[in-house]
Length: 301
Ligand SMILES: [Zn+2]
Image 1 (cartoon, rainbow, N blue to C red):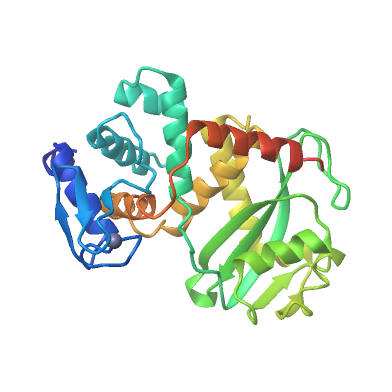
Image 2 (tube, protein in one colour; image 1 turned 90 degrees about the horizontal axis):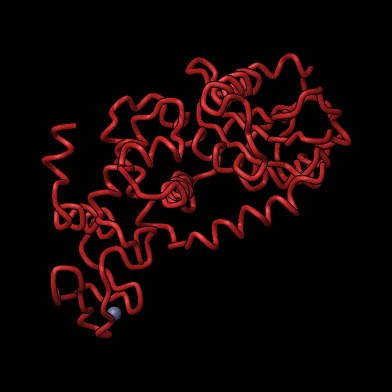
């Protein structure tokens, strides 16, 4: 913590760090790709090619923020230290933010940054399964169950090395349409996919994958990930996960899981910031709209 405070004690230090993350090979104009710019003041640069003026936070999640970057950096540092996931209430408390809604918006912005822009798909041997999250009674596969959310799981099987990377995603249902789409978005074509013999997986072969089926009980990697995920949700959110927030929790969980071997907190911090300067800015209004959209479209299962 002391080291963190010395590094990022000033707004300028934070900007300098973002500059190096955003333009690791030096300034590149987002409009004309010119490689030259001069500083106008402490915040703004002007492109020498097209005279476009921009700051290092323009076009990132920090755009239009009224808070100092030092507070944002502290928020990110705190989040990367929360083994069981971060809550808006915790963030509000730790930063002394005035309102819960600011903390909530920040958390959602940062969760978006946990998904790497244009991130690589899984490859090699991948196990795929689905599970229900939430609700009291077990759900039925074909039709779903009220109050439950169907979540798809894709896990790389690294054989002797165990589990590789994972991807999670909310599924509208367990139809071949949804499950094939889930795999196509997350796994490189031509990879080997292992599932059980549910009909929903029957189109993987024609979608260009090598597909092998086993008994459901043999999907050991997916089951392990599911049980860890459920335990994490229980521990962090007391099991009360609202459907509209689950997608964000899944992203947060995936971020942490795929970096479980990087024990260095500084590295997690850097990765999160690296993503944060690459993704487009969103407003609180857009986040709320997005969540509402999910709520009405996504969960009629
Ligand atoms: Zn330019």
